[in-house]
Length: 119
Image 1: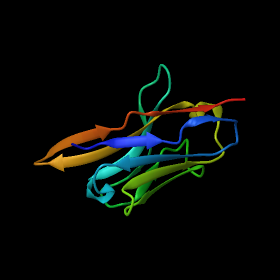
Image 2 (image 1 turned 180 degrees about the vertical axis):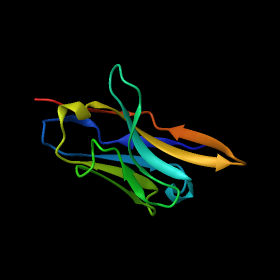
Image 3 (image 1 turned 90 degrees about the vertical axis):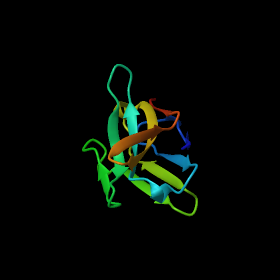
Image 4 (image 1 turned 120 degrees about the horizontal axis):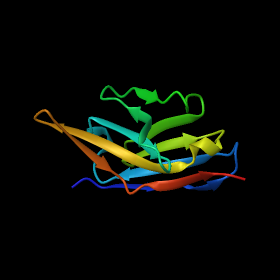
């Protein structure tokens, strides 16, 4: 059973920074894809940043140049460095990992961590 545990959320002022962490129960490199999503109140969950199956990072246009996704295979941990935070970045952030077995996609999610950007 895959377990993903996020940490690092909190309250930060506009312009500030936070780093989210996602610790996986297995090898972070064993997944087809891994990434971060977020969901603000009243809005659908959206992709923030992700590593594709080829290991290339992709970012939502709204966070390009401000957020950086990375991973440490030795620690089985993925990170999301968030700089120049804006109030519109306020959301619950979820870690996601994908496995594909016999053509079927399996998504695994962490419990979510709240990020609030406010004065």
